[in-house]
Image (cartoon, rainbow, N blue to C red; front, top):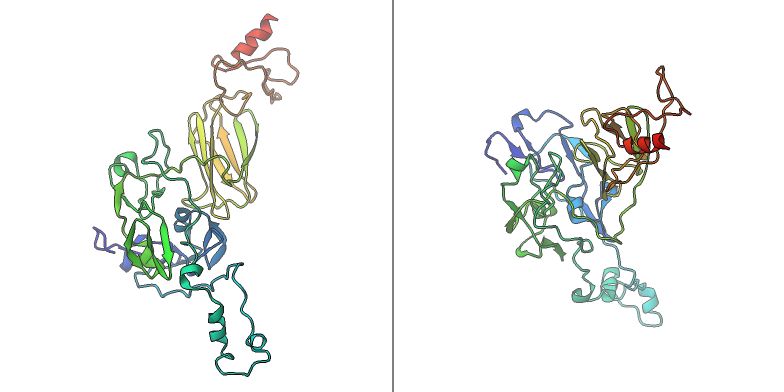
Length: 368
């Protein structure tokens, strides 16, 4: 598909779709794609080339990052062989011809293995499994909340859109052309329940079916309903004089562009964790005191994501999160002295900044 710039065309490799200049297509790692074929099984969706990276939601599946690098391509991709179908547990196993013909005259028709298997298959109207879409997922809202925080490059979550977020001014004003229905895979054809007349045979063509409805972009996933099978992320933290270190325990989080990320604000932290099975978990909190956004950072490790918050004021935080209402602070961490007079362990007097939230506790201590 040619864009407004005649020098740029879309890569046709599955999982890529980026724009590139065919005359400057030299980098061997510019394209990140899936050389395998899609597999839908037991409510999970993945590619045969990377079976350990799975998604439960169709939108997550479409956005699974590629597992192979190469140069971009504009050629029609060869059709990948479909994986062998998995026989449902309820289907009776084919009985060998010798067993069914025991005691009966042997005939060429009964010794044909393929014919014998077909006699045990149910009619197409009863054996065809339901559409290979995942179990129903929470419906997306009409639009993002007004205070939504979206990182640049985040793709629109609506099926068939995928527009990357640039800024509110540049992106919110553009229409979202999407499919409000669910994917429908039936007897080899692939399409959407909202526009069944546009069914195609190739999966690559299915991904390119233009949306049939216009609306507003949605970049933020709605809150997950209570009771859904979403992993719980355990959190722990400690602090030094200048930093607060938070550990979000989640094994094997994916790192890279558009994957696991942490967004910092003056008074809040938002994290989006991409787990190995394709599940995306979001978490966040309002910080007890302001942080330095420019100096705060995060590191993705094998068993956790470590978030380092740089304090704006070098004093102790009695809590990681901001407390609602006028709750008096009655606890704080005391730091050992590193050459100064104040802050020694076991000191009789609390030294604090004028704008520190422990002012009330200090006043109470001095009056007693």
